[in-house]
Length: 332
Image (tube, rainbow, N blue to C red):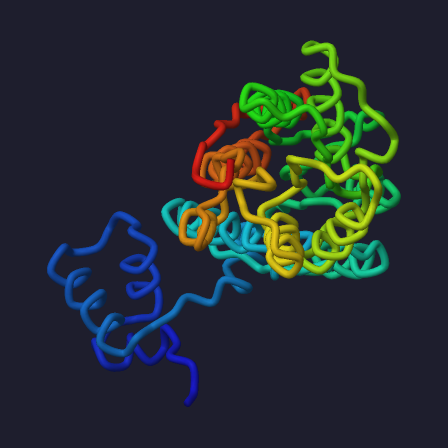
């Protein structure tokens, strides 16, 4: 089906293209009744404005890019839904790229976004390297880091207090009487992983509990990672009574491994996740987890991005850290 144009609307309304343009763009110098008729015809014909052509005229396309690290992870899919909803409310559409936690994919995604007619970019960096973010810094494209940040780079970012979130989770397990608490954490090059490990260590130290190297397992991102690392820990001489997980997704793998060897949760093993994904409260044993305010995270990143887009002068980096909340359920 051919795209409906302003010429089509003008022909049906019996007016000039300029008159149609004034009506569609809410410009003055047009009769109210004529404007109403034109808008009615545009609606009837399902007219969609050509954002690319508008962008060439105004240097803006009302389109934002979003790059996430793993769209399969319920945290990122939930975050995306919040961003898309907020973007629509602000009159923006979004283009999404998924890196699958792969730096080569991130290079490709960033360069695709730089070639697109977008007004700004929200990106959760893979963080194996910082080259892509440095490339963005050299470009004129406004961008905001989402959920992760680089300590050595002066960029705009919106993240959560992962030190505080991990501290709350670990302290909760300690208050439940656990002493041998394993952390199954994410890759150490990711800022949220590093900060969650700091929070875990702080809580253990504040309560006079030793942390052995065997209690810290890393590089868990997927359900499978959680499953494999938990199985290895269960087969060790010193079995944990509690596990704090990098994410709810990882916690699912831990729960699967526990179930296979007959460990009861929470009777034999307490499990805490992170993110408060949509499925956490729907599990057979509802999951205690650290809630990340996904909607607020997306809204704040979007708000910062729009501020950068509409600001003519360069502004100092906006670096926002949002609070988390421990949600206690049956798994502890």
